Amino acid sequence: MRVAVLKETRSAENRVALVPLGVKNLVQRGLTVTVQTGAGETSGVSDLMYREAGAEIAASAQEALEDAKLILVVNPPSSNELAHLSEGSILVGFLDPLSDPDLVNRLIELKVTGISMELVPRITRAQSMDALSSQATVAGYKAVLLAANHLPKFLPMFTTAAGTIRPAKALILGAGVAGLQAIATARRLGAVVEAFDVRPAVKEQVESLGASFLESEEEVTAEGEGGYAKELTEDQHNKELELIGDALIDTDIVITTAQIPGREAPVLITEDMVKTMKYGSVIVDLAAESGGNCELSKAGETVLAHGVQILGPSNLPTSIPVHSSQMYSKNIVTLISEFLGDDGQLQLDFENDVVGPSTVTHGGEVRNERVQSAMHSNSP
Image (cartoon, rainbow, N blue to C red; front, side):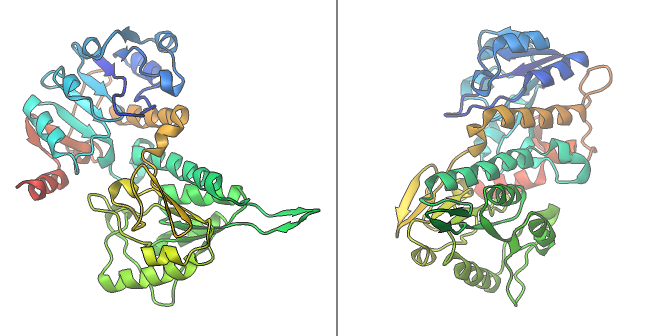
């Protein structure tokens, strides 16, 4: 069976879906791996390194896709590339099916099986396949570095002949994977860190990293299915804003990570709250692409408002492509193992508790209920 690895076409995307170690793994299982030339060059992998791992190199996407049964990507292929997918082939990657009905419809039309890395369930045995978590780790780490780079202060405490410099204060909103990594990174850089999350179960994790957990006398909780946060009631949200607003007044850097799958990100920082912040402080909004946790965020831009820099970075994992690609490759190879038989042939079992929920389309139909609901709500 032939596996195709395409060069990413999304603007400024530096990652690749499969690194040489992943190639070796698949080749050892009897698969033929074809990598489009230059696919790994922005993530530190040359064509020669792929050849040495056992891959064939194709001169173009069309050539790589010829006779390919399994296509591995980070982001969805371009329209031209999709046209070269054969009926019955399997496309695996970040397909964004809850927000991209056009792609879902195209996969239905082509009768291509789409398996979305976003839909891998957050269950214990699927942790090694959870690409959302691996890439969120990268984003949380890089967000703090961005904040530190823009902050006109040191993060750690310094005692010098010129006097003592107090450590900066950091506030992390959302203690999922990105938030926890942001906490750990800010602590390593010497900041005093507070964190807030609507899921009380994460308090112990926050405190184990050396941060304090922000909580009010009146509990504000909203833990949803699969460990995700769910939407708060209006009263709960108002209490949440009050709690965050009080903490912002004395904060130097804020990293916001709160998102609800399939929904716009909740607004946690209003413009009035920004006005109360220290002049020169920094907000890095990791939810900017889904609407933003800060009312003033703009995806892909840096906004200066009321003396506060508000960063809305897009696709932070691509800024550390070597390790983000390594982690993603491990996720995708482990997921493939769920539907790869000992003979190297595909065996899609939709009763499998990972494969079933992750499958968006198959045989010209939408299989995932959440995607069906999203498409229905998006239809005119």
